[in-house]
Image (tube, rainbow over all chains, first blue to last red; front, side, top):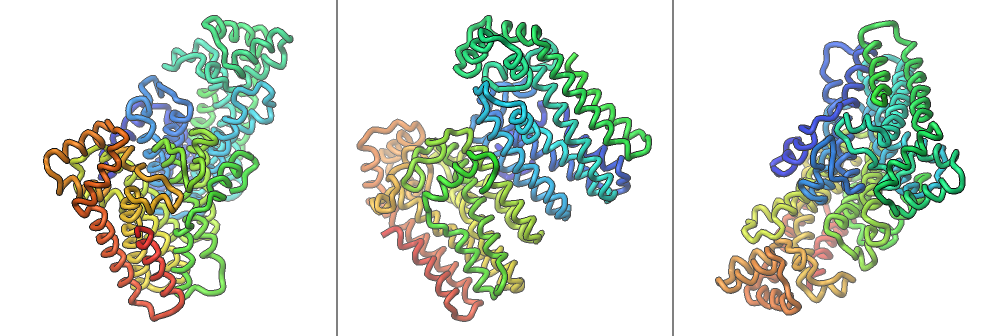
Length: 301
Length: 301
C-alpha cells in the first residue's frame, strides 16, 4: 500500500483498518497448505494480491453504489470523495499485478487477470439487471458467479498453483472456491432482508432501496400474485418506496419462503464445495476449509 | 473488447470510435520496428494492451473530472453514466493484463503493471495539488511524469522488449518515450489556454475551470504581482470565476510569456527525446519517431 503520495496509504489503510472477514486471502493461505505447500512465503504475497483486487473492487463498488457505509464505518468515498476512491482502487489493482510479477508465475497472473475481467463483467451485468423484475434466475446466477465466485475460485486455485499439486487437486480447489463463493453471495443477498444483518454491523434493506434483483426477490416475485408483482415493480423498478415497504417486502418473502429457499440453495452450493474437498485426505486444513463453508452459511440464522 | 455482457463492447466501442491520435500504441509499433523486431505480431497485441490501459484511465479520468466531452464527442460517463464507465475501465484494464499473459513475457507485465501503478499515483497527486497555487514546479512535473510520461515510456520500452534489442537500446527507447510524454503533456497543458485547442475539437479553459495547476499557471503566478496572485487564488483555489476571468488569465499568461515558455520547456524535453534516438542508425522508423516529437510540439502553434 506504500506510496510517496500520502493519500494513497491513508485511504487504503482506512478500508483495511475497517476490518472485514479477510475471507479471500484466508482461502489462498488454507488452500496452499491443504495442497501441500511448505516452507516458502509465496502464498502470503499472493493472498495479499487477492485481497488487493477485492479491496479495489470494494472501493469502485462503493462509488458505483454511492454507499455511505462499508464494514460498519464511513465508506472511503464518503470520507475521501469519489475521485480518490476510483484512483486508489486503480492503484491497488496495479500493485496486485506488480506483486504477482515479482512472484513470477504466469499461471497465477492468468488466473487473477481472468478473475478481474470476470468480476467487472459481473458488476456490469448487475447494473443492467438492476431495477428489472424480468431478470431470470440464470442472469442472477451469472451476476453472482462474476462479481463474487470468480475471485473465490481464483483465490483457492492460486493456492493450488503455489503448491504445484497437480491438475485434479487444482480443479478440486477451484470448484471448492467457486461453489463457496456462490453460497456466500446467496447468503449475503438473503441477509440483506434479515434482522441477522444488523448483528453483523450492516444495515438491512440496502439492496431493496437500490432495486437490486437478488434471489429472495426473484422467488417472491415469481411466487407472488398480480397485486404483489405490482408492489415489486413499484418499489424495485420505479424505486417508488415508502417507509412501510421494506417490512412489507420481508413479509412477502416470508409468505413465499423466499428467504429460507435462498438459504437452502446456498446450502446446496456449500455441499458441492464440501464434496470437492473429498480428493484430499482428512487434515486440519481440510477441516478448516470445511468449517468456512459452515461459517458462511450460518451467518443467516 | 468482446464480452457476452453487451454494454461492455458498446461502451468501449464508443470511446474507440471517437478516434483520438492512438499515439501510445503507435509508439509501441514504431519502437519495436526501430529496435529490429521482424516477422511476429507480438507488437500488435502489446500495442493494444497499451491503448487498453490508456482507455481505462480515460474512462476513469472522465468520471473523476466529471467531463462531458472526450475527443469532441459526448464522454462515456455523460452518455452511459458513471457506473458503467468505472466498471468498463476496470474490465479493459483486466483484459490488457490477460492479453499480456497470453504474450507470456514477465518483463512486459512488469513494465506495464509498474506504469499502471505510477499513472494512478500521478492522478492522485494531481487531485491533491488541484486548486493549490502553492504547488511547486517539481510537484507539477511529478504529476505529469506519472499521469502521462509513465505510459509513453512503457509503450516504447515494450517495443524494445519484443525486439530483444539489448539494454542500451531498451534504455534509449524508454528515455525517448518518457521525455516525449513530458513534452506532450506540457503542450497539452499550454493548449488548454490557446485558441489552437479549438481547432483540435476541444474546449478551451477546461483546466482553468477545474482549477488544475499546470505550468502556464505556475509561471504566470510566480511572475505575477500581488494583485495578480489574488486573481489566481480567487479563480483557481476558491474557483470563484466570472465569464471575463478566462480571457484575463490568458492575457496574464501572455504578459508573462507563460504560454511560450511552457512550449519552450516542451521543446527541451522533445530535444532530449530526439537525442535518445541517436543510438539507432538512420532509418524510416527513426525518422517516424523523430517526426512524432515534432508533431506533438507543433500542436501548439
